[in-house]
Length: 471
Image (cartoon, rainbow, N blue to C red; front, side):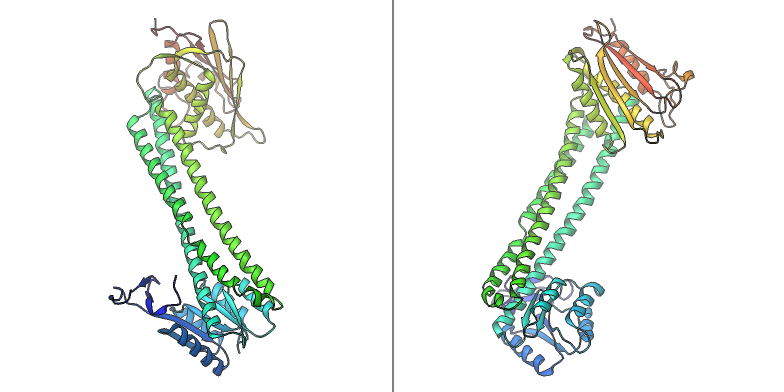
């Protein structure tokens, strides 16, 4: 940003947007204004000297003068001030009080401030920079060029801070949009699971999954654009500003507190770099979440088929897929329910994988709902999935929970079509699950000691399902 050639730089008085007019071309379409500087010093002669020096260097700029901090704050409040050159010792307030009122009380954090201090008062200047000043000058020991350079560096740093703040706002907006999209995805996926339960089948709506995939692709693109914005940030401008400052390092470090000032500027660069790294880390975190959602969609797509063919599977893989579909239904890992898996038999079986998947997904979701409506105090809410051999021909899968349980009079009706103990239940899911197991030559049964004692559903499936189910 070429702040030194102010004859070519204009500021939109309303938005602060910059426009550059090349020599020999028309001025920008919006109403331009020149650079606005404010000189604050209790000594009238000093104010005039500073103003003349600035006018000589910056040329076509607007310079205002005032003698007190309160008047300076009033001018800043009115707007249009780009940089303030302020004496630390004012008649009414000191430089630190001025900075506090400007930054905290008025919230004008994007006005550049250069503090004027007396000889041997560098400690005060360093403290002022910690409070929000961009630079300082020692009265009586600087030239016109050094003053102009200090103001230029201060304004460039403020521009970098503006850009950093805009990146932060953009990132927060993207986070909100991603969160809203994730919530919409979760609602859509829950609807898919509910539809599968009510229809009595585990196949997913292929068209909806395709739309979800497109949404995830768009999110991936948006995150990629945001990542590029962060990577292409003008953080390098801060490094260049510090490099310019390094040219004055030797005379500055000869001052009593000069080394502290240089250390502050070097530390400032480290802080800004760390902030950008944290932004990048947040973008990567969002990208990882999108990947997880994509895996859930892929897992659902694998079963979005009407082709119920018999295949050789490991039941552990089917259980893992059922848990993936459970996650896709909007169930968070921190809902207080833990799932414990035990595999005492890992012999593969030949079955209709999609039907086994539907049964297990239904049982896991029902167990979780039961636990969420149970107050166990300090006792952990647990779903126990156990796979073992029932006999030579049958594999047994048990899904047990310590939730609400089932009353004795309901045990014989739990698999009947239309029967449900849930307020918003359809009475179809368990009925279809039981029929699916019967078709494969297996069975689905339940045991419960009563209300509040949990329930254990037992799935028996043949190691080898007949090629023609139902025969």
